Length: 167
Image 1 (cartoon, rainbow, N blue to C red):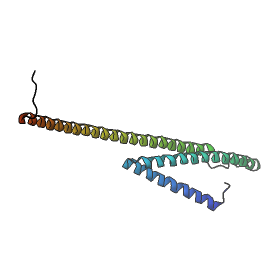
Image 2 (cartoon, helix red, strand yellow):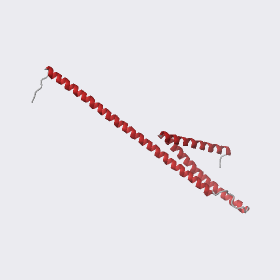
Image 3 (cartoon, one colour):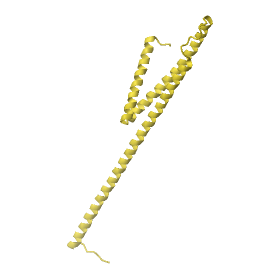
Image 4 (cartoon, rainbow, N blue to C red):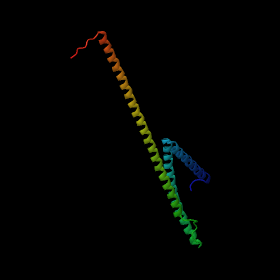
């Protein structure tokens, strides 16, 4: 690790805090059907995926150095391997973490898109309803206007101001 011990712990604490806040945003986004919160969660999960991949690379480099060191120790001392558990175990755990984060990225994206589609569908339905109401209102207004004209016309004919030519 190239970082001083205190700074490494600070970065680990920061990453843990961001991940916890990200999880809260994800849960609240799902509960409230909030697309912006899910998008924030999506972006933070992409960041988390980069962190896990970086840790896989770091772990692999560290494992390679440990194997070289253990080979040197084994040549001096016949005690066997100096690693408490194999690097394959670490890689398997990190790959499992990568898969979990990768899946959460796509679940968050799919939910955000589903919420957006639902919102657009609802908006389209409201617009369609508004158009039909305005059409009905316009037809009623035109019908009332026609009735008024027809009534006024009949009144003029009845009063003798207009004469109708029949047939």
